[in-house]
Structure formats: structure tokens, C-alpha cells
Length: 187
Image 1 (cartoon, one colour):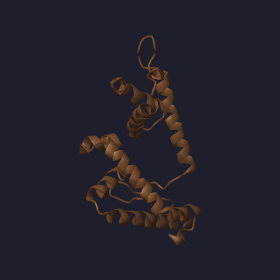
Image 2: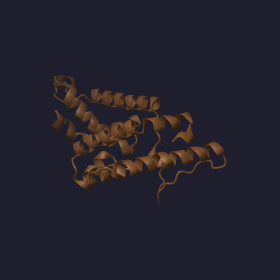
Image 3: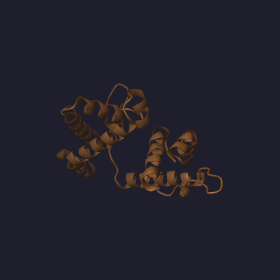
Image 4: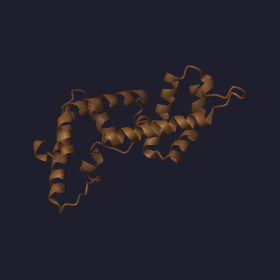
């Protein structure tokens, strides 16, 4: 089943873009689609038409669309501070309305929070974990693109990034709550 799906990979990517998935995320969504179909579909007749043995494109479209809607719903219920908005580097600069006092406080506290996260990541024992975290979360590369450029398995990157995200979320949950609630002085 996965082999047949992989042959039409470009079609699934195009479908994802047409659904509204941003280009930098669409490869990850299509890969997640493959993983979900492999894990949850035991009866291949759901994915293939019985008569012609061709892939049921509507089923794939509905699955991809539902994944996108679920992602957006999760994201709207659990908003997170984007490192791209906060991180100050040569190419990425967050420009707030600096004339408002609350935005100055918010920017200052967001920098403190990001600084804490960066210090935590820098303290990790394994060089691989530090570099992979920085490569994925501080760049615009999708997991698939990162896998192609580094020759690290996509599954390894997926599971590692999932582990990093969960760890950071648990470690800095209280600070993020303070940031979200506007208690900037507690960070």
C-alpha cells in the first residue's frame, strides 16, 4: 500500500497545498499521512477501489484535510510563542510596536523565555540533540528537507523533535503560562 501511495507523492503534496497547508509543512503532513495509513488501515480496500485497484484519491484527500483541520484546532486551543517571532538573529528580527509599554515588557519577557530555552538546549549532553533541535526549530526547513540535507532518517528526526518539544513544553510550562497571562515579571 505504501509503495503505491509513494508513487503519487507529488499528487498528495499538491493536494495538501490546495487544501491550504503551507509549503514548508506540506511534506511533513504527507509523511504523517503515510504513517497514519500504515498504522491504522488494516483493510486496504478503504484506500483502493475494489474493481480497478487504483488509489481512492477522495479518501486520501479527506484524510489529509482532516489532519490539517485537527492541526489548526490544536494550534488555536494551545497557542505557542514562535521562536521565529522572538529569536533575534541576522535574518530573523521580531519588530513589535515598541512605543507601547506592554509590548516592550512582552518582548523583554519573551527574550528571557527564549534565552532560558536556549540555555537548556545548550546544556544537553548530546551534541546531536543540540544541533538537531537548532536545525529544525530555528530554520524554515521541513523535517523531510532536513532529512535530505543531513541524511538522517526522517523517522529519527520526527521522533527526536517530538521528544524535544515534549521536554521543553514540560520544563517551561509554568514560564509560558506566566507569559500567556501577562505576568511578565515572573519569567
